[in-house]
Image (cartoon, rainbow, N blue to C red; front, side, top):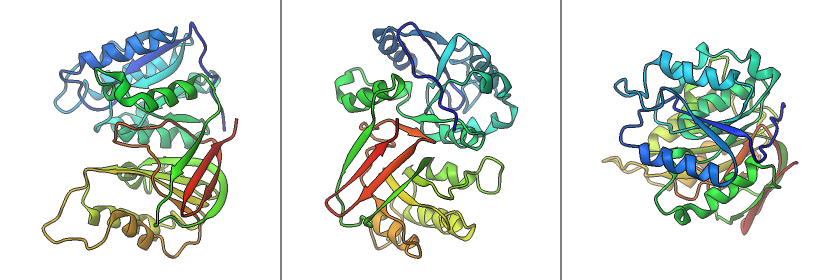
Length: 304
């Protein structure tokens, strides 16, 4: 995997919006700019970030233009997505990575940005799963750990996590590249040339706002497609604001996941603080990790 250079003081970060509209989100973007500047980084904001095209932050062409410009600009060392939502998949096949591959840079975000993480993994570049601009509250202390790990990752500090144990953990150890992101986006990538091949890799998943039966349906579909056949392990992040159906599912989402993956013997670690919660720790996707899981705790150690 290609590892983009870590940031250093004086580097420039571009803020772009490849997905959902940033209606009334100017303050969050301003806070993001101020945060980066407090780390002695320079910031440029895409020309079309605050454009509006119904659901989207501008037309597909406008969102693509901002992202392509940031990819091609040699002075920009990282691209930070302002928010997720929906829309990234609409520009995936319009992006040209030829200049980017000659001078790679970090692509940062989560949720809908999983589409970009998936595409970049298939072409062999590491990316960063971390907070976005709209994640920043007025009081940054509310997400202290999220910001702390975000800073650590972009500046190249060692990264490791010890997760709270879970009775649902499936014990074991595994080593492999960490891949994944939002379950819905991973599911929608199936059958495309940007669907991640998880053979020999460790899959991270998180989700928001879904019914449990939707989560089961996605896992069953991926299972039938052979997605997990040679997977080395699974790390489960936040399952946030799950919707309640009139007919109860009958088990926890953790048990649902264990049941869906019962035919495999790889380790499964729950309680990774990453996803659609305030505590959203940064991770390097495409980086090899060591995963050790038991009932009392799990550890994730990223290689340098």
